[in-house]
Length: 251
Length: 251
Image (cartoon, rainbow over all chains, first blue to last red; front, side):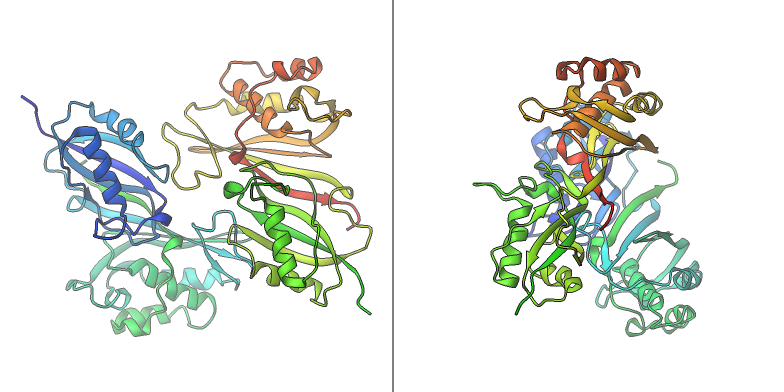
C-alpha cells in the first residue's frame, strides 16, 4: 500500500515573467508551473501550499511550499526530478519529507525579505530585473534612523494596501536595516512574524521619501501611529523585492 | 558650419539576448542596436568603434566605444538621448567629447574582465544569465596558486581558439585572482594589456579543471609553455564573462 507523505520544498524563482506566486485564471503563476510539473512527475493532481503569496515581479530565494503525495520518489530526489521539468527561472533548491502536520503557511513563524535599490544617473542593464533604479543618492543614515521606529510590535495598518480585508494589522518586526554597498547599491533587510499586503513595499516607499529628505526619520513613528495609508509613502515597485527566507520552529 | 566631434561612450549591456558586440548579417548585435539609435538621434549614418568584440552572451559593465558626429547635442547629453532610444538591456553610462585621435580600440592600453561562477547542487534562478553554474565545490586556493603562473608577459598561444589568425600571441597579464564569496559564488578577475580570442574563457575552463583537482596548479605553467590549445581546459561558457573596464592612458 502506498503511504501518503508530506514533502517540503525550498524554492528560488525569478518573478520577472510570472504573475506572482498564486494560481489564477488567465495569467501564468509560479504555483501553476510547479503544480503542472508535479502532475507530470507523479500523475497526481497536486495542490501546492505556499508560505504566502508574492506579487507579480517579486522574486524569492527562499520560498517554502509543501504538498502531499503517494509517489515512491525518494523525498530528497524531488528537487532534481522537478527541476528537470521546470523552466530555468524556477528552481527547487531542496526537498525533504516533513511530519504530516507541517503546513508551509500556518507553520511559518517568521519571514525575511530583502529590497534592492540601484542609485545612479542611468539604470543598470545587468540585473535590471532585480533592482529598483533611483537617480537620487539616498541618505542611508536617515533611513536607518527611521528603521528603528518599526522594530518591535506595532499596528502596521498605515502600511497596508487598501482593500486587503485583513482585520488584525498588528505585526512584530524583529530586524529592519539598510545597508549601503558603494558605489550604487542600497539594500533593505526586514524580518518579521508576518507582513500585511504590500507592507514591505510601502515601508520601502516611505523610507525612500526619508532618504530624499522629503520626510524626516521621526515621521515613520507618526505615520505608524496615524494608521492612515495616505500618510505613508508610495508603494515601491515589486522587482526590487525578494523573499529571502521563511522560518519554522519545529520543521 | 557644423564641427565634427569625437564622442566617447561608456556602455553597460546584458549580452543574453544579443549575438555579441560586432555587427553582422542575420543576427542582432549590440553594435547594430547602438548604431541604429545613433542614426535615429542624429540622422547621420554612424559607425561605432568598439574597444573590441564580446562574444554572444558575454556581458559588459564598462565597454567603451567612440563615434564621430556633427550633431549639436551637447556631448554629455548623448548618454541620456541615446538611452531613451535603447532597450533596457543596453545602457550608456557616460558620454563625453574626446580628442579626434581617440580610437576606442587602438588607444586602449588594458582591459579588465570578471568571470562569475555559482557552485551549488541546483542552478540559480536569480542571476542565471550572469553565472556559470557548477555542481562541484571548486578548490579556490589551488586556482589562485595556478593564477600566479599567468601573471606577467607570456605567449598565450595555448589559450586561443583555433582559427583566429592572430600571429603575435604574446600578452601581458597584470592581475589575475580568484575570490570566493561564500556560500556559492566564485569570481575571477583578470587585467591585461590585451586578450586573444576566447583567452579568458579558456583560462577559466583550465582553472576549473584545476579547481576540480583534475589538473595540478603547476600544469598551468606547462600548458603555457607548450603553446598547444589541446593541453588547456575547455572553453568556459560565455554568460559568466563580463568586460568590466577598458583602460586608456591619455583620454
